[in-house]
Image (spheres, rainbow, N blue to C red):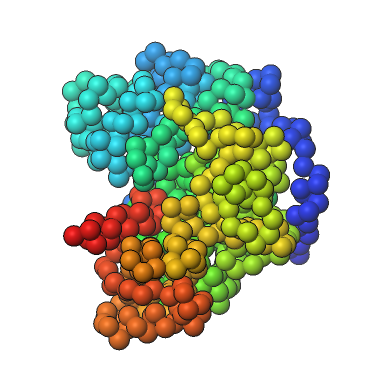
Length: 552
């Protein structure tokens, strides 16, 4: 007989009972006395014959690795790095696809007390050069598919390349696999303090050069709490976070978070598409899935027939990266029988506001959810005063009353978002009377038209409810009468063609769903929307083009 899962704790109880001492007690080490990220995410689970990684190659081959396997691999990595002169606090960068060697590299870097810096494999030479410039990385580990970019990076550090059997080693490079084979798997973990770094991340850089985000070891407390309370991850789950580890959500919550809890994670080396995603869910029996709304909309675009074969398989689905449209929630309920919950966070803080899978509270479609236990979130006006329900302002972290908060400022850069005891996220929200947070938009995305403040998220959500619309982005464009008007950029479903008639139909659809002032007065049909590599829509690029066009 299958044992029934225990009832979920009430959210209010979790907030009331939260103690940072209890979170520290879940660790093997102590941020005050000595801690090592490798030990927390691997070493303490070695010797238990426990699965750590399901890795599917681009060709479809499945490889399963235990925590013991990763312990041995990471020990060899650690000794290789020490032989190359890497010391505690030094930065090592990785520019690799989702292969087991990536996890071994990260754990090996952490094992010797060094700092891991992710480099997304789609980055070009200039993006790589900027990131390596501020991190002062001592080594980059990459593969032949990405190695050529480094030739265009000035003053790049030493390079270790993971070769396939037929590949030739570039002159001056270290043969990663050969160096590991020659190294011992026995490597003593270097103990560090909670304020010492173990990651060097980057902001997305959508409005200027990306800034370095130092991540201290005490962030492990927040990562673990998110996996437990928001993702609701259980020991019997088959977990897959499809986000790329070259970005925060993937590195924090596809690698660090599940391994921290001693639960296996999943890698797929191939490019994302709806068919392969459904294939892997079915093949592995995935029960907990995490990703972005962009990915989920692509699953929707395949239609109900494609989803039917895995309907009822997914116990929980988590969404992050941009607001989750209510239509996605309804579709997942109808065609996958899976509760999909919106989660909100940033590279600088990790996840802070969630519709928690692991706690019970009301879940309202279109809401980002409630502050994660361990954070006090507030809404501030321009003067820095806290606002009450149904008042738009900037979402902020109350620093003194958020014991899980770990971000203290950008790497060697000013951080004006931290002032007056708050960290301001830059996102415009409002509190609902029940204490949940409704997302309005980035501060610079909110549209002001004829005195009305219009959040692009609501308009986009209304648009994708129409069967003709696969994706939509909404921006404000200059207008002499109204200051701004709403313009929508729409990617159509394959069965539809753009026309003036359809544009008017979509405008009227939004007017009926929202209000007379919120509908798009202009609709442009496009083949695709500009996005960051992590899938966030870059509205500012659309807005910039429109402003320039109207100047002419």
